[in-house]
Length: 274
Image 1 (cartoon, rainbow, N blue to C red):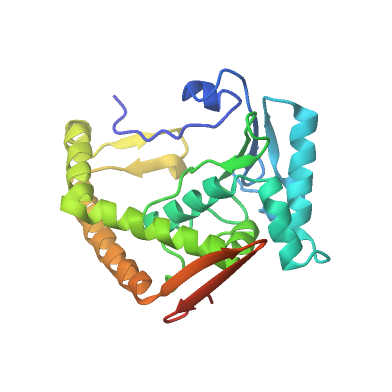
Image 2: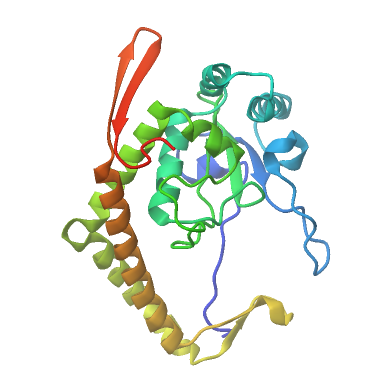
């Protein structure tokens, strides 16, 4: 018995099969720090500056997957394409709806732990030929500095959320998500259920150190005092944050109307689209 442990799922070519989404392997790219060979981390690489900074995990058609990734990185980093050209290009390469849900989730979770350098996964859908993201290791209530209403996680999120229509759609999903979590104490009830399931293991841990490896850097101290403080702090911080964001979004009145090939977005309120 080495105490309470934490495990992170690794995304691979069987990602969709494991979730009963599809029967085939899928092409997966990992955007993270370069592989660690010793105890020191390598210099981080800005993921959207070069397709080579993404690690091909395997699955699907390798040649097609790399071709699509190169095309996506070219659009994101291009200084020649106009904003309109980039907007027209992105839906041909990424699942916009999936990314908007992803960015909405990051906002609701309030995390800065997914950025230009790490904790990103891209899966190439065999059904649509478009990339979609995987929410991975976000760290709940790990906020951006000064907690802006519209945080920028990386170069792609900046490009997507600069578009008023897409940002409006994302904001609506954020508002709906927060409303759902706050309705009838849904978040607190779920947190209590998870705590009840895990607490026996924490109690058995008896202030031991759960070791992932012999190196002290991989040891997490777990105690009942730490456990109870963490639960209380998470609940208090999350509810206060969601109340703040809900009020900010309520102050922004916006609407989008489609006219042929153009979208007219009107907005009023503090920093509606800045």
